[in-house]
Image (cartoon, rainbow, N blue to C red; front, side, top):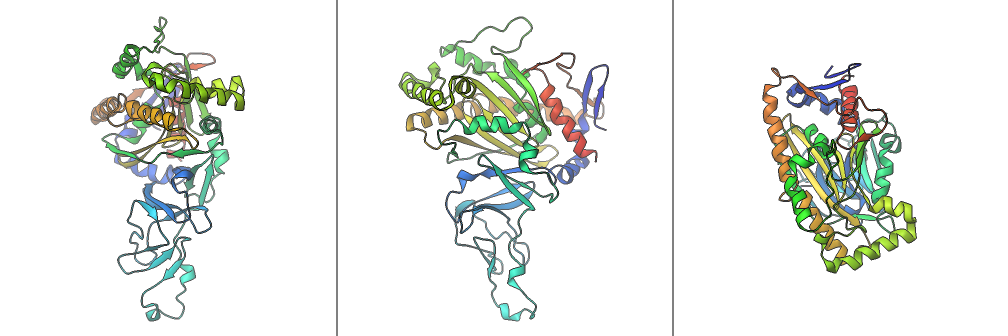
Length: 418
């Protein structure tokens, strides 16, 4: 057992969970082989033959559209000797050909051609040697997931309360169609992947870690209300357990949004367009729902490793564990398909300014996570991390409390202890 939870309101996580190679190996089998894992967004592969190659749950995959325009996920390994059949990162292909021995597959995954096929025995059947697919692939509002467990619950059931927050993202588009904007942020962090989960919806660190960003907003003319005594943030927010290990911080927005909430750093030229976007939201959704979409910002964790930062921009971020102390992060900007050039420029500027690898937030966060990981070297001598903020409260938990972090860890422990 790697958690301590008891009636004296102690919630502690054993630090071996962040440093022990044996735990890293268990996670591969008990979490990443059993949970729904994010693959990509449907907008990344628009036309038949479009593809992206990436690593998902430690496996090389081809994320693509087949000849009928259906989104597919193939394991990127030749049925002959196991070579990657597609070594390009993206493109459009009629066929995938293994460069080692020349076996060729069509865009539907079928084995199309085998050089020297006549040398194989009579029982050799190309129809039995198509590219393999994960047991389950499904999508929700354009977000595509896979699952290597054939007996897993449906994606809708798995997402549980996270669906509400994905809906709030999709409703930013008049048509409900969001698109990934071309370009990917990629970087490694010398830290355990679960530390980025914690960081992504831990508002307790905002004032101390991101004071430079808050001062930048204040100096740019953004109204920054002084926190009341005992509070941590210049805006009220709550933390929620959404079921199945998912969680969110759901905050009143103070830093502006390209979707219908203007602040001075966006520039006067952008103000009419952002006001137009808000008017469209009100016409389509009504005042109350439009305010819900535009006037709050949300950091959503879909267990185990998908983050949707729906704040000053919409960011999709996922991360793959490479070792107990290393992860690879990929991030994309997401916006409405119909977005104007002005709104898109504001969105991308916000995406880079705050979430980019050279932005106000991400370098601070990486430094913090790598410092935590360095401290994990003493986990045998100092074995427990405290995560009990808010446990004594009745009812609503603040964004600076740790209910949502505890929800993640409880699900993690449930799966890892099977």
